[in-house]
Each structure stands twice: as structure tokens, then as C-alpha cells.
Length: 76
Image 1 (tube, rainbow, N blue to C red):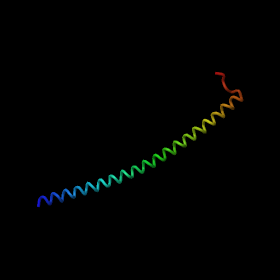
Image 2 (cartoon, helix red, strand yellow):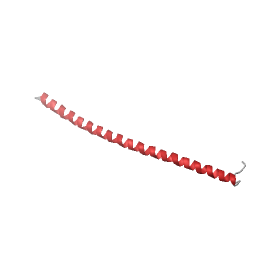
Image 3 (cartoon, rainbow, N blue to C red):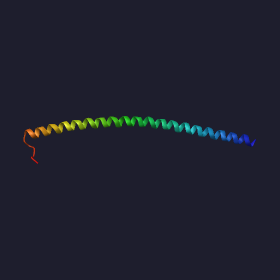
Image 4 (cartoon, rainbow, N blue to C red):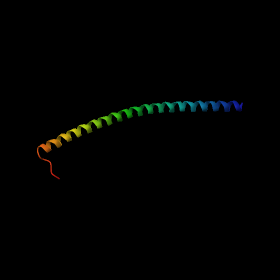
């Protein structure tokens, strides 16, 4: 009888562990999905930054040319 009780207790414990592992696996899956979303947002942000840097460089080049035409550039 004691073997039967021990086996039943072990089986219940193992089932509880299995259920908790399934919950952890589900949580990890959700975290991975969230990380993919964050990586997408970071990539879009970086592309936006690159585009802005290009626009700023273009504006700076135009300002430099205007300064040269108006002789506003220092010789140093």
C-alpha cells in the first residue's frame, strides 16, 4: 500500500512540474515574440535616424555653399 501512495504522490508531483514547465515554455514563447517586435521597432528607428542624418548632411552642404558664395567663410 505504501508503494502505491508513493507512486501516486510522485505522479501528482511530476504532473504539477510538467504543467509548470508548460507555463514557462508559453511565457518564453511570448517573450520571444515581444523581442521580435522590439527588434523591428529598433530597426525602424535606426532607419529613421539614418535618413535624418542624410538630410542634415545635405542641409549642411547647402549652408557651406551659401557661405562660400557670400564670402562668409573665415580663412582659418
